Image (cartoon, rainbow, N blue to C red):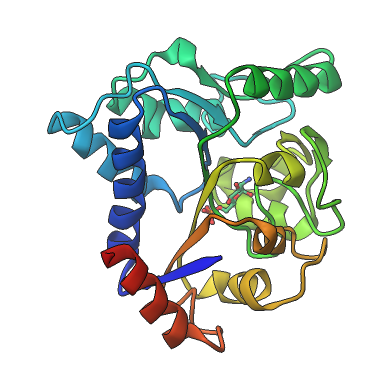
Length: 259
Ligand code: GLP
């Protein structure tokens, strides 16, 4: 696990976007795993800037998103499909038909999840998986207590995640937030060839500490990334503030990024 400690979220987002831009330039058929939440927005802006500047094209890129709320239509403003369309897909030249988000309205959610896994495999697997992290250490919607080998399935949100995510719903009301989601599993995520996780702000400091320096545990599902051999964690100073070896990680990753 490589921890990149940046002065600001702008700097971290630019560095992470650069990794994706370079990968897509090298392989125009890159398969991306994408994330929602407020954290990747600046990175998506930087990716869009590179497209506008004609540095890169996403015409042949395919994408699979991490998760979707059960019960929300793709047109619902809080659905993750809507989020992706607004925050990235409309701003780059990706074909909408090449973008995939789990269907929160699927009549048979388990079949939808199985098909999602099959389609990812058919596409050759995910080359780069973008992740945020929940304040309880979750990745996608894999809450504490989820098997670290889990596959895409229907999951149940914790009260703390419902509280965190309520800010985006009608009048910030917790009862507006769906209690279930369809989510890629931890095992599914860990099969990506490369992982790029972003974490910003002091609200994420405990989760980052658990992910990087805690034991590998289903209590902090992001800690499974310790077992991945190409996982890059881009943090700002606040999110990295509880790491014991913060300065060492910063020096090591900066040296690797330069080389
Ligand atoms: C949700 C998403 C996660 C995301 C997390 C953090 O729970 N399912 O994929 O990482 O929110 O969101 P934010 O970036 O807004 O803090």
